[in-house]
Image (cartoon, one colour):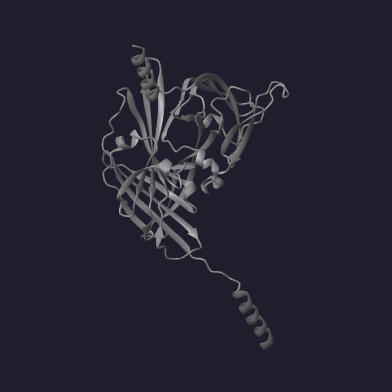
Length: 184
Length: 200
């Protein structure tokens, strides 16, 4: 009987050396945006919709609960949470995925002719420390961003932003698979 | 007087420049994998310097799940046909089981509709100012290969080739390839201004 326990013990020891334990990792971000009133360059323009999307391709893990809250005109709070298995149990730095603000306009050219124009404003985030951080982006003028069609907004961990020309970026942010933030 | 006129022309030649431009009609059929519902696709084009559409519309053919884009464009020779963006919108309803954090036995169900947009890009490569000639090869998008680039290769002797002057090549790339700095990405503009193409 002792020999049997010894075999079982040795088997467990050998087998345990091949086992790998993996922790669940959880993280997310809450991002607040504030925009000035949009002034249309064409007097015949009408804003039809304004939605936020996340570029799912820049997220390697399972992300859900993409929510958007607009309590005040021009104020938007976005939140999302992600989970994955493996890696470090303590998330030190984490990058918020690229966020796209989609604006749909209707432009009346003549009485019977209408053009629909869609603009995407790209927000690229620099990594933040800690698993659940809040990023408060200061008030922004969208009109300036719409003037240059390749404008990309880069937001740092404190929420400060700078506008760059996306075409000159080393790693151009390209939209692939967008998932919409659901209005709460 | 002659000297003044000559000097005036010389001065004008310094500040003026000419660009050759042309107008072409195009007709391009793009197939989609049968799993993609073409009724849920909206089509846009990126505004491109040197390219102007006199007209652009599209029609669908459900029998072979294809979209035909047709119209006429006025363009400066050497500029590329604008990138066409096909936006495929899907809605997925998901059920969730929530647990009350104060009372673990208290569960309640919730429903959430998730809207996703998958983008397909059709990029014109070097020498493709318009799609005036028939492209013999099949142009087909799948969920995996969502970026296509059409390039044009001029053939040296059209008379030998039965009057065919150019050969078109279609190359595809997946999003994974693109996210790793694929050469297509270089050709893909990130312009945020998209104009919708109307169905006819």
